[in-house]
Length: 290
Image 1 (cartoon, helix red, strand yellow):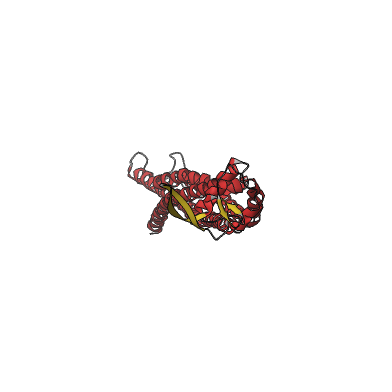
Image 2 (cartoon, helix red, strand yellow):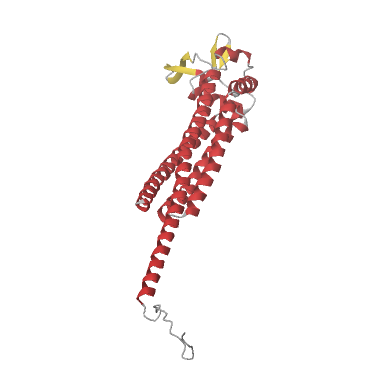
């Protein structure tokens, strides 16, 4: 009865571990997708970010790839009932869990530095818009994509010395780049089609890009903690399965030994050559009886 209960319990843990490893495969693919997406977002605004901002996203992608390979140990170990593979799976999960917690902490730590870092980088690079092509390209990109203009508003461009080689939009003695234009109107001048800007983006880029990076860092931390919670369940199931497999193998070995002993005893009792005969004591011929 105890053996049957042990076998049933081990099967339940085995199938639950298989389900958890299947979830690991799906969540690993998801977290790789999230990590690469956020890395791409950071790459688009990389000119205004420190290099350390890319570390959590890269870390998450690496963890996801490791999880895909680690899941193989869990599946093979559960199917073959290998204590060694299951224990390796649990140990690697524990190590990856530590890495994920570290990635989550790093993401939330960098999250608090986003506003100050972006404010400093945006304001320090704005005066060089007409000087360096990288600054021009980066500002045009964020102003087009994030629907913003300047750092706080379009008035920030009044402090930038415009270059005659770059055309812009003249607004109240301020030259604003075309990337700040929200709405355009088509006019015909001397039978030529000319687009004229009617409306500028009202919002500055600082709050928009801060929100984007801030939420991305929070998503990284939340994703790492979510998969860490699933890993804890997998670790518990793995060690439980390893213990159950060890007990089941010990019980099987004990039952095999008992069956072997019974067979040996039965064979001994049925063999006439080894059957014990009773001992009869008779008096010696030379012995005198009183």
